[in-house]
Image (cartoon, rainbow, N blue to C red; front, side):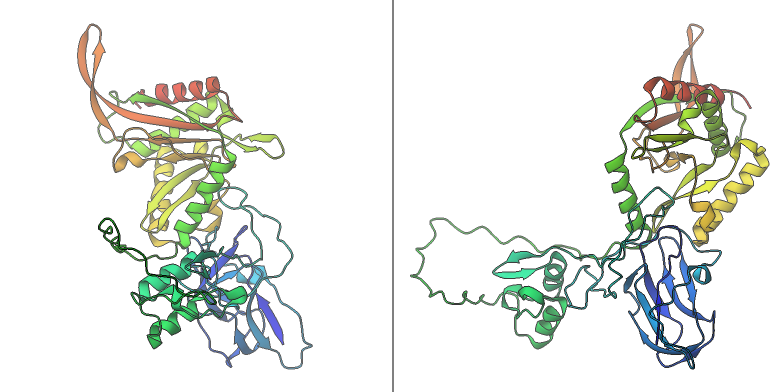
Length: 443
């Protein structure tokens, strides 16, 4: 028997979600034959079979989240010696795979729920995996199965996810017989109680074992408060791009000391139909020419920084699935038509969720053009190891004094957030001033 462990589908992906098995248990498969579709943070990737043989068992079904390095499938190989594990990351990589994983906890073999969806994943190796880095910085990755803390509710031990499931199925959690380790009520217990009708919500809760009921309580002195209305929605797991976004933002909050400067760029001299995004990117390079330290990476743990000679702009892209950042390479070397072509390619790939993994990492500075929707100023969040991000607000018209008179000029609000551990306030201010000067030019 050969056990195939889930390979790292990108740089530092902690896990991936099973979308669909492309073969069935018992099927004969060939080497590199598509085995299963797995969803990472940005794309659905087909993972090929690492061997030729017969599929004995799947370690998970559609919707389950498998940790990187955990068993994914078992094979029988005729004439081959039994192997403990097969791991072939190279064969599992495809060109259109995206980095960063959807992070979701899994329901364990003890049947203790760890996510509302009740997913179940195989246990990973006990040894820790070294963080290999992601598109937005170093995010810890490991092979352990994540567990959700339990709490005492009505005399029973239960996780928040199982309590949410009980509310959804209208089951009184206090009347459910626990089957999990250490007396924990599991999702299976709740579902069985819902099917049998043994613990309907609203029925009287049983008295604690060994405690005799006491005398009747005196009547209340005031009318009881009305019960709180039930929630108007259902809990659902946060997966894919949104899960990654939550993890990255949390990492940024823990590790960066952000400070934001704001000002307005006067673009009155622009020609009609000027390419706003292209001009903003050119202004970023103007800022980096004046103060290179903002086009840099910073490693706070080791106390080192890298100031880049070229500029790769990470474009923050908003999608229905969440926010992610894709890189435009060497923008300081591109002419305006080439830059516009690269911007269009990025947008098309973002819409199709087909951005190559190399475009989702190693950017040196970040640009967010949220003003196309609404908003004037912001406090944009830096994704490490970068040290700065510039956000452009909504273009507007504003009355400005000119030679003793008044004129109406078009203005673009800019917000520059920088990591104050790596940059001084003076450096950031000079960077922003160089951007404003470049944007004020007619062409």
